[in-house]
Structures are given as C-alpha cells and as structure tokens.
Length: 346
Image (cartoon, rainbow, N blue to C red):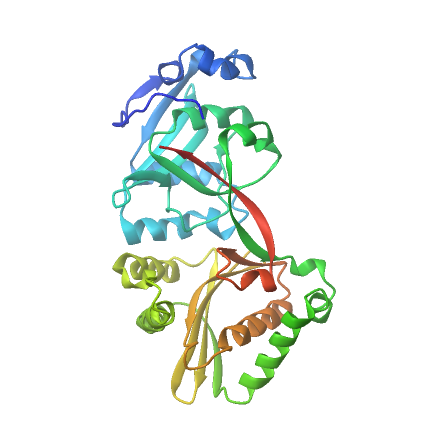
C-alpha cells in the first residue's frame, strides 16, 4: 500500500482544504482524474469530535440496514469504553458529503471504527462512491477498519486497498421453505448432531426462558458462565467479560434498545443456569450476539442451543440469522460464510 501523510494530531474543529491532505502529486492522481476532479478544490475536511455532532452525521449517512449500523447500538460501545470519536468529514460548502466515523482506541493505540472491532457490517458513509478513496487516503495511522461489507462500490479499490477479513456466518432463512428444508442441506453428521442433542437435552432441561426487555441485572450470570466456558481448556484464552468495559457495553445495549429489540435466552437444568444467550432483532433479522454455556458439565449443550435458536428463527419468521464473525470451530457446520474486508495502515 502506498504511503500517505500521517497526521498524528488531527486538527480538531479546524477546516482544512482536502488538497492539504491530498496534494496534486502522482500518488494522488487517481483522485484528480475521477469524478471529483472538478470540485476537489472546493472540498474541505473537518474533524468532528463532539459526540452530538458525530451523532448527527451518523444519522445522516448510515444506511441503517443492519443492527450494527444503528447509532443506539454503536453508542453503547462508546458508553462502555469511552474512547474519543474522530469523525473525518468532507464538506462541499456547508454540506457534508463523506464521513469516516472513527474512534481512537487508547489501549491498542490505533484508530478503529466508532464502536471498535466488535460491531460488523461496516461501510463508508459517502454521498458518492468517488469519496471512498479520499477517505482511505486521509485516514490517520495506525488504523484498522475491520468487518467491512463487500459490495460493488469497493471493487475498483479492493485489490489495492483491502484484504480479506474473517468471514461472518449467516443463514438466509427466507430462502428456505421450512426448517426441515434447511436441515436437509446440512451434512448428515451435523444434522444428526442437532437432532440428537435437541432430543437429549429436552429430556433434562427444566426450563427455557425467552425474555424481552432490559435484563442487564443478570449480566453477572453471563460473566460467570463466560469466564468458566472460555477458560476451562487451559489454552491461555480468557473471557472478554473479565473486562468491566464489556459488561458496561452490554448493559447499555440492553438499555438503549427501542429501535432494535434484545431477547435473553436462559436455559435451566434444575435450579442451575446452564446457558445464557443474548439475541438481537432488527428489521426482521436475528442476531446471535453473545452467550455462554457450561459445556464442561453439559457437553453438547451448545449444539442444543443452536438447534433451539434455529427453531425459534423459523417460528419468528425472520429473514436472516446473523451469527457474526469467528468460526470457533463450529459455525461452519450450520452457517454460510459471508466474506468481509479489512483496511489497515500501520
């Protein structure tokens, strides 16, 4: 990737010409030859760090097609971590025409999407796709922009500026006539496991609860299960729920719901909480956001939870199930990988 200027201290609140960042040199010739060539001298860049102004820009540009593209969801991560926003905004006159919504991660010492690396379905906020390249070039360093939606507007830039990111895993529920229709597409072994563990655990589970609304008071239960689940294998891994910022974030995800809905799934065996999942619903899509289960005591319980959530998705007639990134050595058995991109400057 070609080198660009690194503005370590962004000029907050100042308005500077885009040509200050991108002078007319051979390194920037693509921009001076595309659709922006006639107006580039009238484009300016402003760094917005005021959270209310950032909110207004987000609301103006976000396509809001995904849960992760909602301000209320992203703002939960800001409330949890408190990293300062840096919204690089290109203006044509007084009109914002492109925004790169970032924050600076003080722990990892790099710029990221506003909300960090956890939210997915990221996209570039632009009025015209010609503005994507200038945003990439003025992006500060070091920066990691992950989980970017792959689409046609990025095709001309893909090979030069982007790399393949870890895929996310989905099921296009509306594509199938029924749950049985979907199950028939799975490998025989995986289909058998779903049915086997569904039957096995249905005989010992005392209660399954699906609770809407604010259940943040129970996050300590999720924390306990997650720590036990992640750290049982003694492989050096640790639960993100050891971090108070993660707990605070999900507390706010619960409290900020309204445009989206959160459903808590509790599975009890006797008087013991054996599994706890947090599900999101938005635009008739189901998001399997996070969860944990006592797999040491109850091997196969994770498969049962998956079987239950698949059944609920068809009962609720959702259009898609989003199981997010990272395979964890099981998602590929039931879900379809969806490619995502990443952009990085060191």
